[in-house]
Image (cartoon, rainbow, N blue to C red):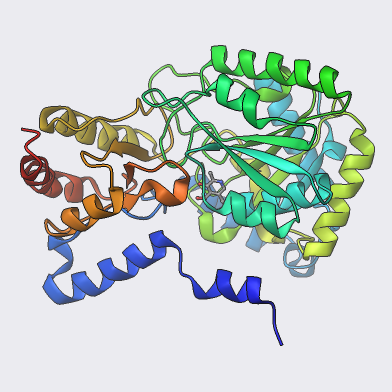
Length: 396
Ligand code: PLP
């Protein structure tokens, strides 16, 4: 009567949503100021002023039927060219409009890319901890996700584990740096080693292995940390980008896929991207938000607010005796649970009104994700609760 697989996906709420719903009920019961909700990854800083200014200007100046009408399925040519020009200025690359396919955010970019690249029996390697939807998108594309755990401690790639996971079935490897759920940025050393590894495996298997770079958090880095631009390191790189987090407009659904000319069979792969977009119904990304993008390239919300939140929590966690992987970007901390069962740890945290996400669904048990894209005053009010939680495990 219907697809059991799709029913199961729809019927099981994600762990994060479940915690968020619990938080809503708890806030109604005891007061919003008494609940410390660190569950969601919804940007807490407003979109930069240029976003609303440009939207108003577009509404005042563009012909309505153009502003709100369909663009071509792959996106407006001028918009795609402006993204190419921006990336070329920023990274010294040589892209043009024809390398880009506009999408409704990174979720669409990834779903299309997985569908475009894979055939039955193909495997996609995911480094854990990873954004849980990767595995949903990979399976929906008919591919098999293969999980490779990162190194405990610094959460950089474990190359011995990668060596045992890669096979002639490997079609692609996904990297996400800065990372959700850990905030870890892959170092240039790791990237160089990964690219050398993939080059070697491509030769050994005599076929391309694609590096898919999912980068909604690229601009959200703190201090002088650099996020290597991967198309410059490895020819078979496909970028899945989203403006959701950098411009704080996740509800407006805008991003792109970049297939550089250097990618093996690039024009066929670009056509397969167009075909997958068509098959999945991801054509003509929202027009108003496409037209917004040229004026906003290079802008972000006030990311200093995230850095301040991160520092507040990191200092408190150090005092409380919690261990955290070094978080250089995004707006997440990955805190090691003092007990093996992270779910039980999250249940304990609820006793102190702290809402944290257990790491099991990120493919890396034994940790919890703390989303710090929240109001700073909530963090300040939550610190005594974290201390009590630490005390309950004898950490302080
Ligand atoms: N990839 C990662 C790592 C994410 O964290 C998210 C959203 O949180 C997405 C992709 C999906 O982003 P979008 O809202 O642009 O679809």
